[in-house]
Length: 301
Length: 280
Image (cartoon, rainbow over all chains, first blue to last red; front, side, top):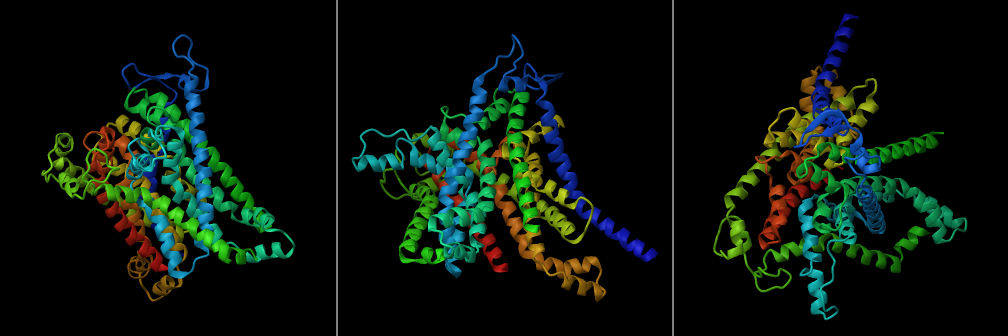
């Protein structure tokens, strides 16, 4: 009896020892900072940076439209920038999907070493430095860049095209850095695709398009949704891509956050914007988890 | 039949063509940097005027091409060694510590049952879901408020926190596919928990642990956004140095530096991917 007790006690002690480091670290350097950020977003910005410990909901007011009278003005620009960020993130999701989906089928029909090599080639750019990958697109798109030089020397255009500093350039940059995030979950799903269901659909008289829409697409939907979420999240908060490929013409919420922390030193406002991003992410993740739980429940019943 | 269609001549031809386009999209931009890094043309990189190693040499202070605008970059060969050293210190420390922490946590969750385990699991991967910029500014506010001086130490702390999640996920995946009967046999034969761990569990999960370490190492080495907010003046890493260079304008030296960084990360990543493919 007592030996069973000591074993149990020892087991519990081992468990606590194993879990303690990460738990403490996550609490101190993750949860508490996020909590403080949340508090900051409701504090008054100090005149020379820093914060005044007064209740001040107008950081959000400035964004959404109930400003402090006579002092702060409602600037629809912040909301506009947020909506533009949502739009860019959404376009990024759509483009990475369109690029990755056929590629996943391409790889899934390969065999053996060839398949592994293709997967290796597709995964490798994921490890390239973010800045280097954006830098590459600067070299491609700028007025004296690769595309303009090629088009000009081929005589197709006289003046260099304005390829940089617009939504298009930002979306290309995002797609380029985030494609592996979309490809891998989709591939995991396509790889497992049960072709007997596809055959059954064909035997029952469905044409290829119907089979694709009613069988293949639903079967690979979990991968598409998973990929969409892990592409959308980093795209929404990104400030490096727009600051290089969007210049001063394309602003995203990430740029506003960066500026309010490192230049205008309005930390509470930056914190409020960051929470706006966080809230969008949380909503998305909760919807996805809900969907997953429902799908699992359906699978069991 | 759909699979037959996919494997039919026309479709497999189309897919192959598309696949090549897809790979071109992934590699053309990187290949371009590689080619440009050897282009002697300092004014317009897109026009080839001859082969040179100068850009690589000027990075490291080999100053045989001291044209006027190079001065801004060649002032800093010592600076380059500094930031590379900083990056190495951060990446090695953060990935080592997070490997220990992440592995311990993964083992605890794979081998013990306790109340609220699934919720706790979700909590552990939260740092991977929160956008980098949010994590970066939250840490900045915290460090400044708690009186930390922004430095390499704050960078290491920040990196270790979110890298542990990555290691946890990688090692957990390895543990999930593992047979526990060997551990039981070891215990039945009288080995204590520590011996069992050292002689039985650890060798089996080693590919996962090494894979997690390499992944953490690369992510730390490449990290821009979180480091950007918590590095302060004293903690500049290589990516932050490249960021500053890019803001000053595009120069051929960036090509050379980018190629060196790419080669290094690709080699490390290739080793990691090779280890992962071998375990299956």
